[in-house]
Amino acid sequence: MAAEVVRRKDCWLSIENMAAVAGVCRSTAKNAIREAVRLGPQTVEERKTTGFR
Image (cartoon, rainbow, N blue to C red; front, side):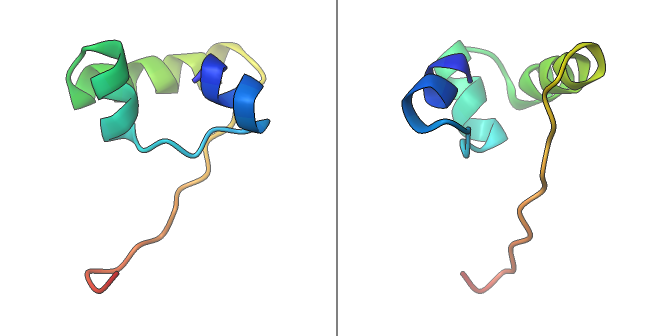
């Protein structure tokens, strides 16, 4: 996430993409994000998507 923030000033990677970059499963990435939000100034915005992209 840090590299994406440095490059774009925000991070729009999906949980799946962050997990792939980190080499972990989706649930591990989701838990790490939840902990980072709890500990620091990070926030999470859910992107609403429909089945018809």
